[in-house]
Amino acid sequence: MTSNRCISMRDKSIVAQIIQYIIADGTENTSAGSWSIYFDEIPVEICDADFVLAHAEMIVDMLMAREEVLEAEIEDDAFSVIYSLMFCPNLQSAEDNAIYEAAQA
Image (cartoon, rainbow, N blue to C red; front, side, top):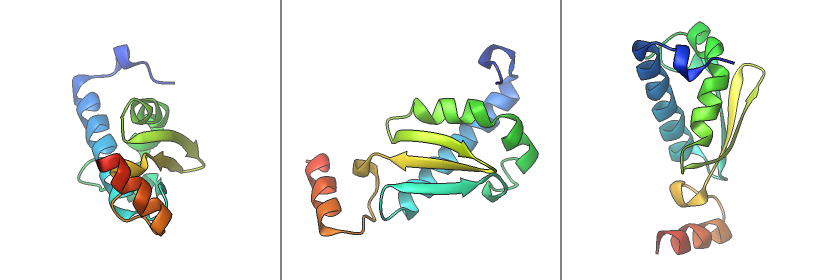
C-alpha cells in the first residue's frame, strides 16, 4: 500500500485526476449504480496503466472517501465501484428513478 505521506505532490495531483475521471465516467455511464473501469481505460493524458497499478490501493482508499462512492475495490486490473444512486442520472428502472428523484429533493 502506498502511504499518502510518501507520495509526491505531482503524484497526488495525478491520483486526484484519476479519482475525478473514475467518478465522472462511472456516474455518467452506469444504469444500475455500479461500474467497472480497467486501469488501461484511464486516459493516457492523465497517466499510464503502470501508474494506476502502482497507486491502485491509494486510489481505492480515496474513492471510498468521496460522497459519490458507496463501495470500491480492485478486481484484477480494474476498479469496481458502486455509486450512490443520487449521483447516477441514467438509472435503468422506474424504481431506481424514483429513488434518484427522492434523493434529489
